[in-house]
Amino acid sequence: MTSPRALAPKPSSKRPPRLARLRRGELPPDAEALARFLVGVTVVRELPEGRAFARIVETEAYLPGDAAAHSFHGETARNRSLFLRRGHAYVYFIYGNHYCFNVSAGDAGTGAGVLVRAGEPLAGIELMRARRGGIADRDLMRGPGRFAQALGIDRSLDGVDLCAPGGLWLAAPLRSTGPLVASRRIGITKEADRVLRFYELGSRFVSGPSRIA
DNA sequence: TCACTGATCGTCT
DNA sequence: GACGATCAGTGAG
Figure 1 (cartoon, rainbow, N blue to C red):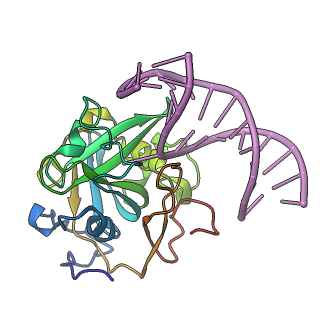
Figure 2 (figure 1 turned 90 degrees about the vertical axis):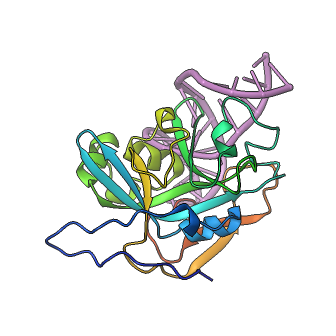
């Protein structure tokens, strides 16, 4: 199910874990494969107050020609980053309140991506709590809007290269990933039956009703 | 635990 | 002017 991936050195209780930046060549070119690959991957955010990072536990793939994808009607100022070569951030604003974080997939011009729907906080948890209003740790990143809010992700990070040093980047998984489960995507009306959502079985940080999760 | 609803505003038609 | 890859709050079972 999961492709073999290099694991970063085991985190020690004394020292912070060493984060190994992902290279673009490690990212599967296809959006669905990338969505599976990203479950377990570490998202690192460099903030003025310090570093925060989290483990991705839930993703959704949006493919070329997919009526539910923002790229479906072609490239616009809003979705331009979705058409960048794989491994770039596509951040959009939704429902007047929330940002959602995607990783672009495919070659330049493809218009595919992976929505990061939920994460498990690993470090910088105090920073996340401060941004999320001190709610339960389980809910810090349970949902795409919450994930972005916890890490302070907004449109200023749209188009950022996630395989290069900067404010937001991807690192190799810090521990092995449990079994992956696939389901229908959440919150869409078009192509709603396609099974393109992936999450780690048993994770308490996965979003959505428990009967799907 | 789940279903329902209002809030809120950028983007596109 | 309508819609949307959401969320928090509320109330019912």
